[in-house]
Image 1 (cartoon, rainbow, N blue to C red):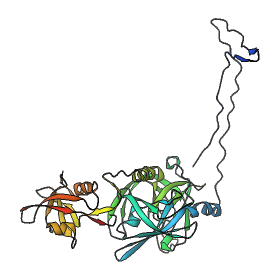
Image 2 (image 1 turned 120 degrees about the vertical axis):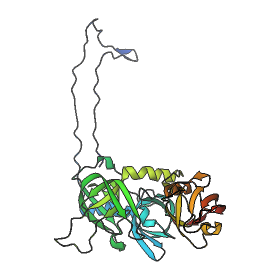
Image 3 (image 1 turned 60 degrees about the vertical axis):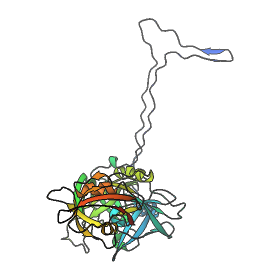
Length: 362
């Protein structure tokens, strides 16, 4: 919530001298050892009271700044929401909305146009992704607030593509907690993740709202909706809504990192490289990433990796866990040639060179 306050500086006249056309103004000399000053009147202006928007005003301000997202992934299609951050179509959403998607489209709620969405980058750990809408111009953008100024009891509203219906639905509520850690499960692929530092609200966030804005009483963006305990048909005995949003102060540095082209251990910028294996930590020696599945005609299969093999080195980096392999992959792009060393299920060493394929975001 933006707060404005004007302050009039305090000043004391000691010596004032100005000359203009022979006219001079000079303050009386001070007697050594004494201090003389003009009387000072302190004037303060209280901050203007915040006037909450009506639900209709809030929707009118926020809805044009969002897009509804459709992301096909294999035999499933994920519906979500995105927040427009720039007139040329930079959009912020959740990683789990676009994870595994072969192509992504978005419909602007300001003009009704359908856009192909390019995935510029994402952070799967923070559950954030940055898209760009191809050919977009002059889109209305979100008014960004400061999540650091949010407090328990503040009125908030989540707006998104609830249940994937393509029609934005507001979900009002209040902030019930801050700095919350939750364990989440992706309904599409069952993957789990832990999100930290979240804003907890009692707004009824639904599937399809993911990636949408959480705004304060004047329509300023303070969070990105990410998870909720939605109930299909609420009754008086249903549990109270309990939903979570990623603070916008956490999200914007990741957006800047992606737009700046800076990949890191958790942030992927550009196309996603694919090795073609599923791995887990190897419980015994040697330490490494144990292959539990190999995709057909993947770089891994072509180089000779099989189920049960333990990858111990990748691109010159020592691999002692599945996390090490993911981190090593983050520094590569599709088309890179990478040396791999492993020990197969019989204990025999293996080595080879492979070319990484391009695949959907993971």
